[in-house]
Image (cartoon, rainbow, N blue to C red):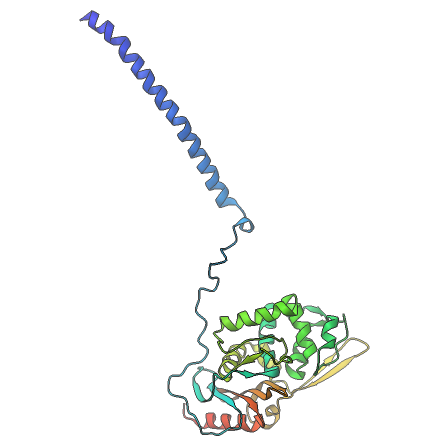
Length: 322
């Protein structure tokens, strides 16, 4: 028995040592890998947000469905009242219910009602206290200009008054360049906003509406946009202003803007929002009026007498039971 023990003893010890060495050798790479993963995990969780990889171009940035600004809980009226405009719509400004239509999705040229979208983006992207340097190119915009001077510095709120009350195309250019970096990029933002709001009949090529080609919308889309933008109290205040007297730096000293929306002085409860005209677009009008707790929005496009048409639609709407 002692001989057997002496023979077995040295055999068992080397086996134990080899197992320990094997375990030790295996433990080294495992430990190294664990350390690497731990460092990588720590770095990935402590790296600043700016170092994050940009989203894949194929990834959708707008996951939410566009808001439903208009609805048809019942079949909207057609025919009566009769209007001369080629397209028109009447909606409840509070609920978005469509009350009356005439070719509501026909794509029409929209002239200066384009400025509703311009103002929408300006209010969302630019502080109204911002001092805007007027680009020299803005002073050369065709047709309606309020007379901005190249490189003069003007608060954005004054330009917004000029945009929506006087309907200055130079105001539109200056605000677009300030809010979008360039006028061209601002037009891109306008089209992106139209898609985000579900305005499928709308496409912009101009920040003011002075360019007709490719700049179109529909009565439906303009009513939806008006309802969206009229939620902003700053917008509502400007478009309801009949006359604005604005102080100005020398040598101008002061300006007076007279609103071109004649309904503000001739229709009870009228409080906005925008007129438009070009030779090809004819007269366009997006009108708003409220009586009591009820607000209506009427749109007429390519009209010969937009105020008559708008009055007929608004009268029809206020006569309807709720």
